[in-house]
Image (tube, rainbow, N blue to C red; front, top):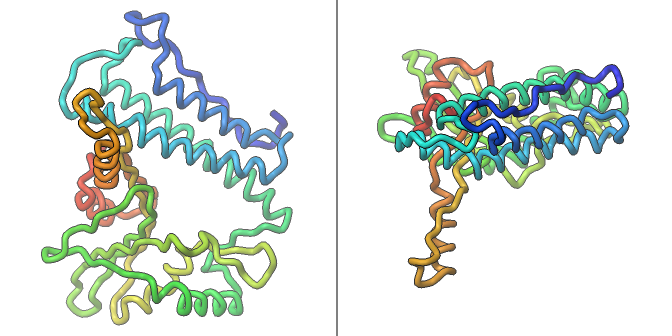
Length: 298
């Protein structure tokens, strides 16, 4: 790899137990494969936009990994099964190693984006701006875009004793908002589902300049909650288990069985909750408890 790109060198999966020296762990080996996708994103011999695409493929692969691979391990952990994997690891050992490796890969991905790909995009005229740094004209354009296209389709859902935490669909992005009553000082948590029928980035007047949709919403929250103090807003996302279990021998109607399992998949348990590091402890607690997620899976 040419100099100037962040290093993506990570130790490959190794046979980690004397009980199974001839076997590699299946899950860690899969993460090694996705690491190679990350290496392609760092390879300067590829065109810039192709490298950005590899970065997106890495994230999409990781989503599939959690949906298809992690759910089974979490079920084993919950049932307290003591069976070891082919390479001699317990369920807890596998999940701990997976978590460590994914954190390392995500760190590399973030550095690759912030220190390499995003600056190169800017050098080539493709700029992702922050709402707070917009010119007065661009901010006015974004505020008008919000009023016309975003505000009418947003449905904030407050969470309190009379309103339970809303269902969060698989891989959908949500915005959590902490509000405070200016007089009584009462704190309120609100969830806003990010619109899926709008572009992820709002185009600005300057060609190939964009601002993230969530920042446009965050900059206009006062219109959604008049008279309330906006304490904090953050994005979060859940991943649900998609590992379908079917017993074909006992099924009278295979098609009906598949349809039932697909319906269950929509309501399947959460295998991953993604929260930004900058999120306050108050909001983190509200989301973790509301979504019913094991803190180890955050």
